[in-house]
Image (tube, rainbow over all chains, first blue to last red; front, top):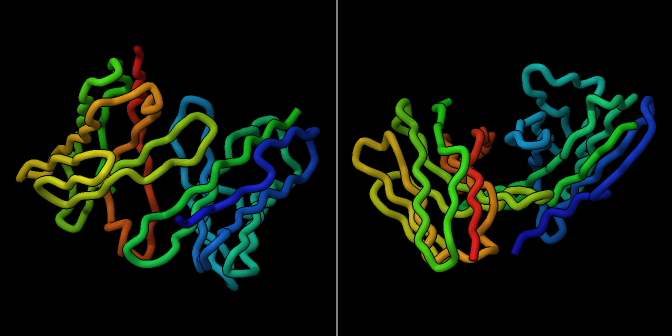
Length: 115
Length: 114
């Protein structure tokens, strides 16, 4: 079946560092990918919709200059957390939709810890 | 978007049938009901989607009454590996809808014991 892969699965870095997370659709092309954030014991919150070849659409309250999204190809979207701080520590999950009559497929997430 | 209400947690034992009910009183005519499963440190996995009456697949059944103001996810003969958070979502048809912006509620933590 369709697989969405995220890399890295876990990252720890110092405050002020920028961190890039990759989301790949391994066996299908995805014109649209989605980025979610999940804090411990909470639900997933949609951050932005990533569109191949165009600018991402951000949800209300999400800083586009802090969470840079690039969707340069039909199989890769990246999320860069710029100048990360401890409050950005969270579980970041991406998803992609394969085609009609198929649900979104989610990656296994990236756990980001900012010290 | 229709708001959903689910129990925060449920406990069960292996081999039992588990029914998780979700309330969505202000569901719109065009809304579908979708359930996802999430294990710790993993992304959600699609379980089932329905619009009305009953839908069944190889892992679960979804019961939707005529007024559609609630729905029940039924997991037959659960095992330890079914311990997870189950989310009820209400919105566009995720199988054919173009946008697919998913709004997750608080979910139900199901714990299955021996």
